[in-house]
Length: 300
Image (cartoon, rainbow, N blue to C red):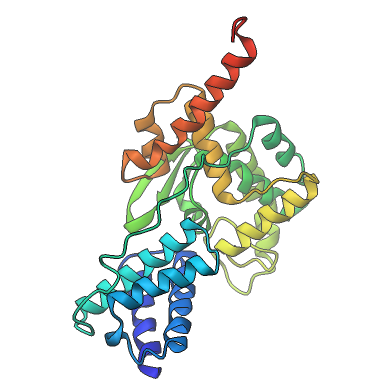
């Protein structure tokens, strides 16, 4: 399997360098392909070239048997389809056995978002007298103010922030750049952190860095580090809710649309390539409108 490991490493480098995927996304690809490699060993499939359409279908059946969610199964099949497309491009295989595998129909689920009172409670958890408290506050404010992805947040440099125009230069998927505005709350929190907390954290670092968000060692905060920060803040609220950086992204989009923002503007700020991706948030808005109607109309 040494050849397979070499090919996999080349593929992961391709995702990171050519496709500009975040480390988190690349790690997900590696994990999903690893699950398929285990399947190959169980079924005694000798090499990547030997995998057939029937094997791909059997792999999907195994995922069903292990009760993976439809979303998870779709991601794994899409991942392997991309992997084999790469192998075909490199002339390592002749066919893509996953090309014709039908993806499981996705469950129709509205994105999880927070109500304003939940957001306020989250913002009250930080000790603003400490460097890490100031960092966490500015991190929360920026994620909610802009709706940026966690990978985009981790890559922000000081030079990407324009305080005079209150805009942030974001480097999104596929090396695409966009400018996203942020409000006065995020501006205030960033100012406090940059002028105070960040300077104190930077004193612990072995070398200087231009990254905006730093960990307790003074080195750049990673994607995983940001997720850890959010998890710890949620535990402090003592609320039985699941919050991730992506939930804050959902919350940003939902609140914008609920307050009357048009879909195209929200699409631009989120960095979605297709309007259909942004449209999932209109379902949430319709639910909100229905709830308001049912609660307030005298003949509802």
